View 1 (cartoon, rainbow, N blue to C red):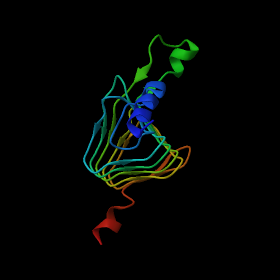
View 2: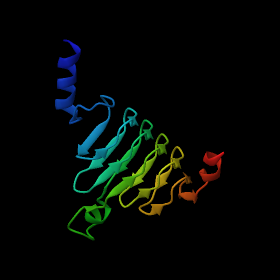
View 3: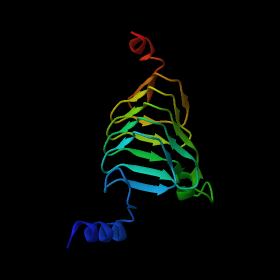
View 4: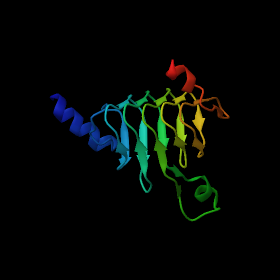
Length: 148
């Protein structure tokens, strides 16, 4: 079996659509992904039912989940629907390994999401450092560093 046959079989068995990033990146829906973006293996981009935008020159490490959907209310009987919210990631954003970007998040350009961070659905200013669980934000942390 050659590589193309294997990739086709793999896509059929896993529902991972072929993409330009990595064969083990799972893209659901139609996210808008800018130029010069890297997405590491075993990452998920779920844009099913909402707008998900990843700006230019972003680096999304391996094992990252960018997921517009939240089904916990449906699962426990508080809602009949899966909640879906847009996600907007500005240009030149780094997202560290094993991070989760939840629906409603808007991350400003030139920001860094530290590894293992769960980013809540809020607006975060440009040049920020986002880290920890629960999430903490050092607003405009990189602004002065980048002006030097």
